[in-house]
Length: 126
Image (cartoon, rainbow, N blue to C red; front, side, top):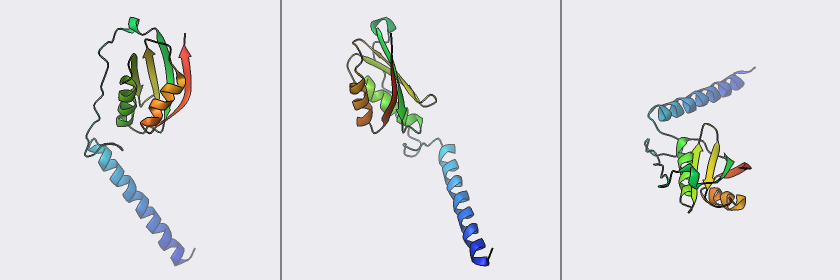
C-alpha cells in the first residue's frame, strides 16, 4: 500500500466516524429522521374505539418507514378515513387495520402511498 492509498483510507474512516457521531447525537436528543429538533408527530386516534364496531380486520406491511414519526403519519392518514381504525407500529413495520365495512386493499395502498410510504404484504383476517 502506498502513502496515497493510506491517506484515502484514513479520510474515509474519518468520514464514517463523523457520520455516526452526528447521527448518534441527533437520536440522543430525541430527534428522528423525520422530526425537526425532536418534534414528535402527534397520533390522531379515532373516537370510536369499540372493537365490536369494526368486524373487518387486516394487516399491512408498511415499507420505507424508519421512525415512529413515519408510523404516526401512516396511522393518521388511515384514521382519517371514515370507518377505519388503524394502529401502526415501527417495531413490527405493520399496520393493523380495523374497519366497519369490507377493507379494500387498493384503497389502503393508495392512502399509504399518498403519505409517501409503500405497502408490502396485505392479509385480510376472517
